[in-house]
Image (cartoon, rainbow, N blue to C red; front, side):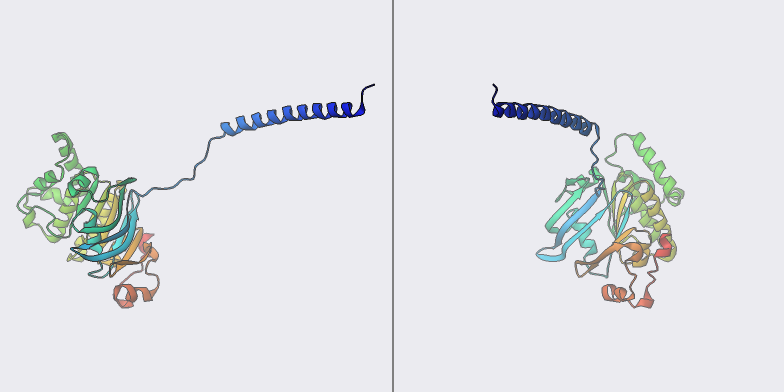
Amino acid sequence: MIPVWFIILMLISFTWLFYESDWMRIRLTVGRITKAIPKVRPSKIQPVFAVKNINAGYGDVVIVHDVSIYVNEGEIVAVVGPNGSGKSTLLKSILGFARLFQGKVVYCGEDITGIASDRAVSMGIGYVPQVNNVFPNLTISENLDMGAYHRKGRASIKAGIREIFEMFPELEVRKNALAGNLSGGERQMLAIARAMMAQPKVLLLDEPLASLSPKPVSVILSKLGKIKETGTAIIIVEQNVRKALSVSSRGYVLVEGTCAMEGEASSLFAEESSKQRFLGLEAKGIDTDLASRHN
């Protein structure tokens, strides 16, 4: 006679084997289904250009303190603030024209901190300084040629000049005129056009509207809009707050070398008190009704 305990043990063993077999089949089925489902990664836009925690200045004097900004492809970002706030120093430190004490410069995901200015241009970073930004003894066409020095082949240069003249027809009309004989607005257009001859992915502009009358200011801003449409990212440093923010999607306010505010350009100065607090301007002295200008 078979003992009862033996019968119970066999029943438990067979039950476990069937359970284990069914469990393995379930695991294999789930595994196949999981592999068949594509993995969805969260989308994250990587800025084409960013500076992180920058301290910069001249000699041993630190003017810019822990400033971070970024710009995406096909975006215009404004850096505004009162005179002496460190806006131009920030740009100059990126290309080695001012001393970079601390921080990181990232371009297309690559750390380019401390890069030489000529290397930066060849990589796709254009820079237009506020003054001395054209060759006054050369013609408009010759200035454009100088901007294309790293292009390969005369055909490429000619094609680039044709594209520039389509964007800046005002320059084509006077292509044989010396840059030194141009008006202030025409000089700024030429300086921007010469930088665009290098086919930059990022364009850094240091106060392009300074000392210009309203008409050339409007023309230059319209050109920046066209450049943006090509996918070029633009960082514009400017004291003309209203005009700079009117073409920008976002803005940063520098005060005494630090970033006092940042946000959407259309709402950056929504509060009247912020105009006087950060820019030293009376509310009636500046038109910052930007929402309608972005619509």
